[in-house]
Image (cartoon, rainbow, N blue to C red; front, side):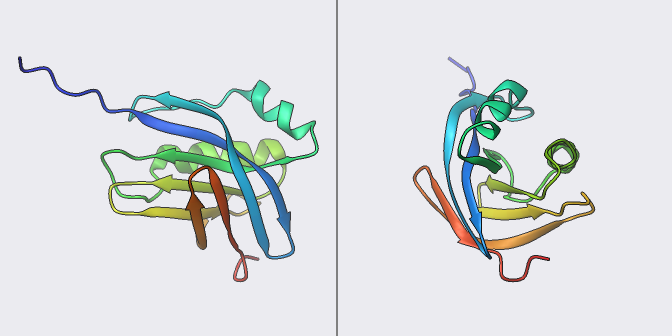
Length: 130
């Protein structure tokens, strides 16, 4: 049998709060997709935006690549930042590490942040983020 194993990409919305220069959130709506493309349902984002928690970002895996934003990640995050009108967290878990990125409000660039993932909990600080 020469079947290749199926590679799965995991992804979640991250909801929580940004307080001063710190953030804490947890993954919701856990999903699986293919390694090339994942999709976040707009309806799910609005549901959490209308609750007491805010969407503070998105988590996904790069099962075959390093934990750095792809051109698709940049384009997607620019769209969500524009839609929600605020900077957002992009957590990428790759073959090398789990990196936390902050997409600036103007969508111009990502900045790497200090952050930790504990199971489904995401936390860190944003001391250098403007």
